[in-house]
Image (cartoon, rainbow, N blue to C red; front, side, top):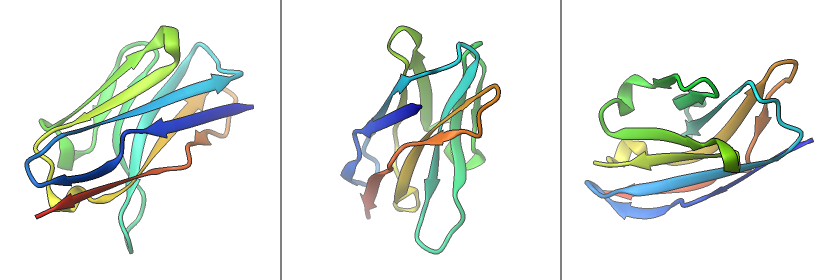
Amino acid sequence: QVQLVESGGGLVQAGGSLRLSCAASGKISSINTMGWYRQAPGKQRELVAAHTSGGRTNYGDSVKGRFTISRDHAKNTVYLQMNSLKPEDTAVYYCHLMSIGSMGDWGQGTQVTVSS
């Protein structure tokens, strides 16, 4: 089983920054993709950013140029540096891990609130 533990959410003013962390533990394939999704009230869950074990990254259009995803492979941890935050970034942010042969695993979610 895989466990994902997120941290770093909170309340910040527009224009500010936050850094999210997600540590994975358990049986984890060496080939995987770790990423972040978010879900705002009344909206569908959407991709924020993803980082493959091979080093490739992918970002949602709304966060390109403002958010940066990175990984510490030795610690099985993924980070999301969020800069120039906007009120529309307010959502619950979920960590996600996808491995070969897995249905995918989710973290419990961390709230990010950006005030105007």
